[in-house]
Amino acid sequence: MNPPSLDKSRRPTFTLTEWRKLTRLMREWVKKGKSWGGVGRDRTLIQQYVLLLANCGARIGEFRFVAWDDFSTIDTDDGPRLVARVTGKTGPREIVFQKGAEDYLKRIYDNRKCELNDGPPLDGYVFCHKDGKPIGSFKKGFESLLKFCGLRKDSSGRTRTLYSLRHFYATIRLSEEVSPYLLAQQMGTSVEMLERFYGHVVTTLIARQVTKTAPRGLRATSTINDYPFERT
Figure 1 (tube, rainbow, N blue to C red):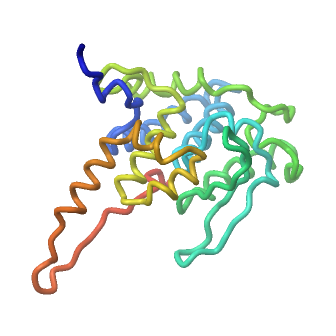
Figure 2: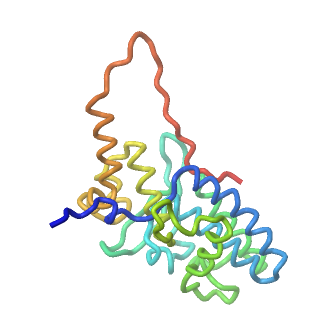
């Protein structure tokens, strides 16, 4: 019997280089849509949807019916953070967004306010059509975006989906040494599931930690922390 390959349990995601390419070309994709009538509205909304998902790791279904009054902010030592109440497989929970994600939500609010000539109702859906009804799926729009960016498939030939944004979030947070337990709480999953699908990241993290040596002299350490990566 041949042992199962670890790669089969991985999910298609994005590298940092691919993510930066996506966010850069996404702006051009949105601009082209604005010259095509109603497509511009849809693409602008998808842009913010993608950025918000990549900055919180929520499931697609958890975002579908989120309303304006589900959002709030909390104060941290590093400034305020956007928080949302969602309901998923593990029941209701609160998710915390990365720094700067509030800008993406504000763009949706400002556009919706222009449509209604007033602020949207607190119980109104955030991701909605002009008539206020929730948008069932962004699948086709996201596929159009990936095709435009040349990122439909990953290096192993696996087709990316909206869930790739969740996997991207998990991979980045684990690589930045976030506690798997806390990350599991944030994403509404278990540590066991994180180990199953992101074990390659955890293994690299463990290897780095257990082989760490004390710096000589006063050598300073630094980390790359430019998340979120889209700052228009």
